Image (cartoon, rainbow, N blue to C red; front, top):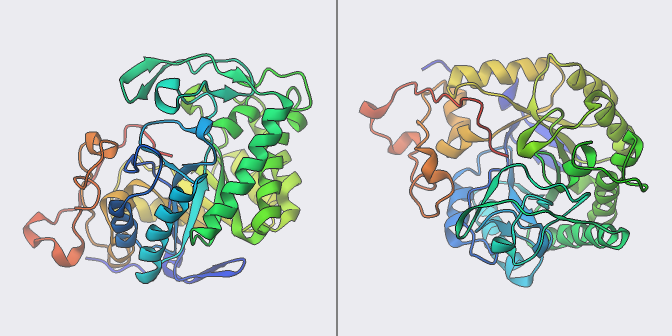
Length: 380
């Protein structure tokens, strides 16, 4: 094994929060919550196993009932959710870790068979694919176009969810404006056909994402708030249009708030939008690289390229999924566990979730520099 001494393992700082290293566990939906969105004891074990990350950003939690995307995802809008998440944050803190919670509203990525409600969205444009529900894959439904009153209520729901997250023991929250969910739907021209103050030109299309972020920052303090974006990402049928104008405009509006960080999903340091955003954003950039394979060398190469381009922290998803001791493995140059079949990503239970071995429990005969081709499949 080759020991690595890159900047990944240096201490870092967010406003008001010291981090022991620059490695962030990216939010990964795993569908292990109760049906009502309450986190489980198994989730507390899962996150505590990964507490050596500089920061854990916990999986997406919905700020209201209509924002639910898939079965058994987490929520943060009821007392039971707060109590469930408190068990998780206590376990992580006892293991020496720190956590933010991602707040995500699915918008048109939802179904009445899951939430009992008709999804809402900026415009009545359905998801162009089927969606998984408790009764299997079903055709997407046409979402209800949000009224001005709906928009105001949703902004308030995000702020209330952020307060609930702090009450649940999180150090802060990440507002999810990426991956084709509600805030991203407002940014994109093919899902936002509005003609009011929330649609049309870029300055209007960024308004909802900005208002949500500003309301959350006003509720719990800007230093406790991160924002995730994924410029140019087409997941969930998104066609942004004007990508190189949208994100500099959003950064310009929010840059003076003093947010904890800006999280760039699927970050490519060679793209113009990455360079524009890095130049314009006055604070911490968390960058989530695109990995065509998972190995210690691949992670180091991608991370070092992003750090050299101006990223401050590196967020990793699937490497943390299969390696609870990822920080140690990367520091030592040790082999990575091979990720289990995708079937175990979302089916519930401990298999493929909490049963990945750490180095001190893995028999040496199983050690190999496993490489997992991702084939372009990415998890939020």
